[in-house]
Picture 1 (cartoon, rainbow, N blue to C red):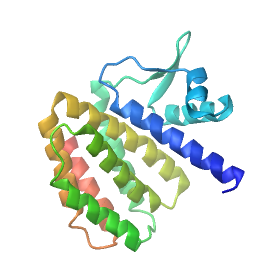
Picture 2 (cartoon, helix red, strand yellow; picture 1 turned 180 degrees about the vertical axis):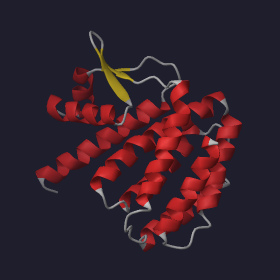
Picture 3 (tube, rainbow, N blue to C red; picture 1 turned 90 degrees about the vertical axis):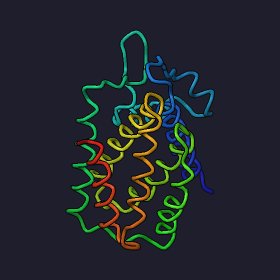
Picture 4 (tube, rainbow, N blue to C red; picture 1 turned 60 degrees about the horizontal axis):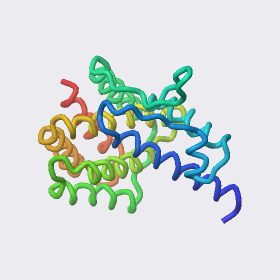
Amino acid sequence: MNQTAQFDTRYARTLEDLRRIICMATPGEDLTLHETALTARYGMSRTPIRQILQRLAYERLVETKSGVGTVVTPLREDQHQRDLLVHCGLLEAVLSLDVPELTIAQHSDVLALAGIASMVKDGDRDLQYDLRHKLYSVLSSVIPDPILLDAFSASYWRIVRWHMRDLVTDPQNASEAFRALLKHISGYEPRNSRDLFRRVIESEKSRAN
């Protein structure tokens, strides 16, 4: 692996690790991300760490507070419905594009998600986060427009944060909704990414209503 590839891999892993920390944080927890601590933890210089924090800020997962530093953006209940509707709108925008069909491997991933659905227990935040991440990997991999992909990514992780919050405040209903989503998408026409997106939209809209 060349140096550039190693950097890209480390960048991606660090970004994903911080996303997980943010999404899994206890609701209401004051979480501050210090550049110095992050550079030591991940063995990276300040420049890529700052780039990662900028990416997280674009995804509205963190924000900069004067005199404090980079803190996790608090979830505001008045934004919950809006975030769901924006996410559904971006999913619908994908359907206006010429999206490719899923590969055999991606189709297998969708089937695996459906197979695990019945094993999802109420309040199992680690498993549900991992499954959300797997679904993100499948959906994001077939979005051909980079601008829409960036916007989709930002909205997706906001939705994941809300889901993780709901797993603390109302684990039964949140888990039932997630199991329903996985079950619904499992009925999609094999490898048809458009049908997969339609089913995700239907499930997410049911939460928004």
